[in-house]
Length: 357
Ligand SMILES: N[C@@H](CCC(=O)N[C@@H](CS)C(=O)NCC(=O)O)C(=O)O
Image (cartoon, rainbow, N blue to C red; front, side, top):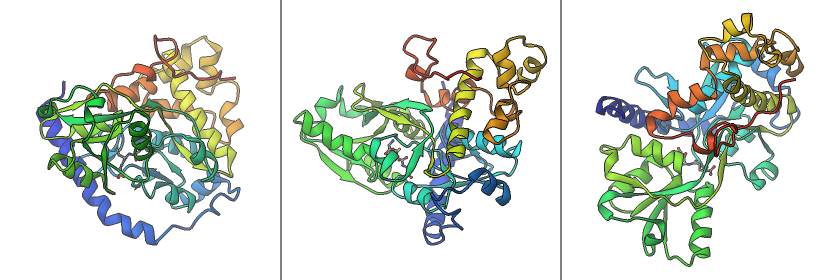
């Protein structure tokens, strides 16, 4: 259980982050960086190396996923994926990632225009995003689904009881579409209140302008964790959609997409083989299993096949730890359990890495 001290810190960081992003967003919109010929077959690894940093599009501020701490250092599950990519490319993440906060609405334009090299934020893989937006999803690093949060005092037990309710929702999201589908499909009458910015949604929900707030369950957990009294809010048991979340890049450089895909696979494989931040170096020296030696880069030349150093996964693992370590450091504190995001070897787990060979 989290202490109220931690909660106060999370709260401060959350609202601080949102404030900062409000200032930086108009500037971002006006100045879409020197685009590395967006989508046009640019060699992203070389572009990033030449620039000296990775431009990683993250959330504007979601506890556990992407949020600056009290020192202004970005932390979270999605942030660790940005760091991992920088480490694969540069060998280190020290000052090699520039975090660009992106709202739900601007995120795809930010990626298409070249303002960011990749998105690492709660983005659902859908057919239309994968094809008509010219983007490529590099895997599913978090299996999620859409839920509802209500005030405990409303005494609502399940989503069906939301008939007639006002529900706050952000535009530019699958959330907005699913809410409409769900209401229509179940003949439930809801009144959506579409509010652009996350913090304005939360303010509206807190002020009682909406009976419920809806987004991915992971987002609800993050938002609930930074509420004044998390226990005053309930995440209903109903999950009305599939939200497979993962990092994405532009079409045009398969090598960069491959790198992201295999970083995620590498984090999973490391968990499967028991390679951690603390023991990676030692396992490189002592572990007799050939696949462990290939993951850690002693044999197989797998890094080279992707255009990075063979020690790519060793370096990443020493910095971020494996998938379980990333999950436990960032998401366990906001109350999320592994569930479907457990390895395939655990009951109900869906996370599965193809072979390292
Ligand atoms: N997974 C859904 C929803 C993702 C999403 O962007 N959710 C909102 C609500 S938690 C968010 O992150 N907003 C942050 C922002 O716009 O600043 C999607 O890909 O459309």
